[in-house]
Length: 102
Image (cartoon, rainbow, N blue to C red; front, side, top):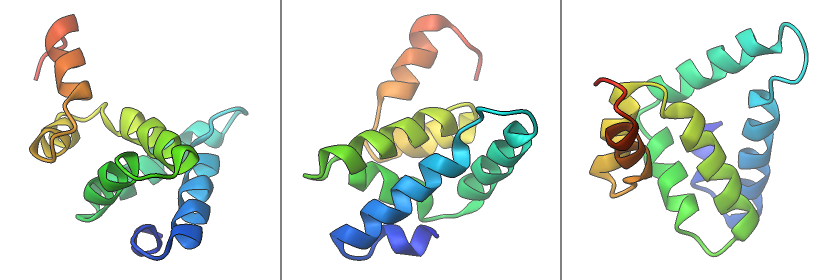
């Protein structure tokens, strides 16, 4: 799935929309699916860089979807550090402002 994020605009847009759907936790039992998807994304070396790149892209919908996913990935300190290395500082600043420990 992550490899699709680096493909042409249409494929990236579809891939990011699919990830958003997989991460929705609207009904019972889905939250474990969301956790699994987030864990898999956290372990994929290219996931966070591609999501940050999509946030900085020209497609507003894909950028918003990527930002939503990055926000969910920001529950793990390691992900926040990776995002900060890529100049996506919002999760780090929020963590520092609200005092959650690293």
